[in-house]
Image 1 (cartoon, rainbow, N blue to C red):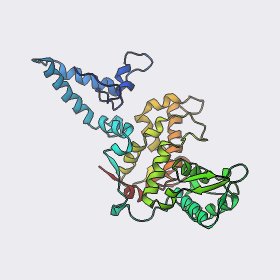
Image 2 (cartoon, rainbow, N blue to C red):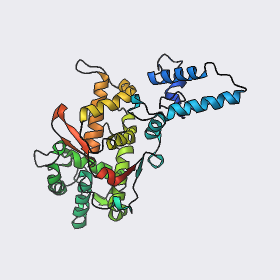
Image 3 (cartoon, rainbow, N blue to C red):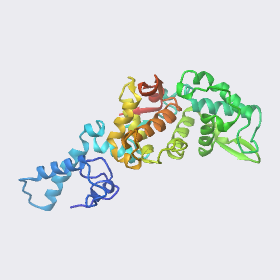
Image 4 (spheres, helix red, strand yellow):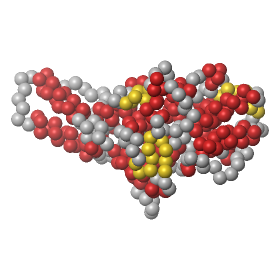
Length: 333
């Protein structure tokens, strides 16, 4: 029988990589999940009573059954098949099959992207830089004049998004969370650099179109930015790997509102192993802590910041729905 690579989809149909699933079945530290167990039972049942002329015939039979298992949608995986989950979680952006970026020349990709807070901040940066130099403070932060200018440009957007509400006028970059985060992302994306005490926009920043700018900032945030920055939860880097799965899940809501807490809890229930990185406390379980971390990092600080969702309500009654940007940026299958 052919050997399964450790990075291949597990043949049990769990949707995980083989090394994260049945490759470690013999280890008491990593017991096989219910999906893997059920899939193996189905394979055993399918083999029962079968007679094969050769090992090759048996392998062909097994391959066919495994393919059937891997391509069948499963409720435990949020309605996705194991093959779809494996692709959404582990494949890079360019190799995704259920979600693809629209090309910048596509008609759907045309129009403005300034409903996203991060784009408003970038445009404010650019506008300010074209009028005057951005001199760094002694501590290396952005100058007060730019901080105030960005806030004034962002205010209308902020007034419609409670999570981005500003209760006072900021004078320092490190007090203005959204601006400080955006500056880090601009630097990571190669759009902003510091030279001889000044912040300078790069040639790329001055020439890039809106669609390509959004895509660059999105990928930079997804792959380079530290998601655990300042929230106090464990690193749990796997949360970042759920980006494409989460977006397709959001798109499947077809613009309908959903409870933010419910959405987060359902996603964590699919990838329950994430909870192992969190600690139990007297007030909540590990799964609850993982769902809260996902809510903060994916929904509040990523999707809302990039204008992909609107949020209404307060606390546990908050609901969200996707914005028109989702279909302007990606095509789904």
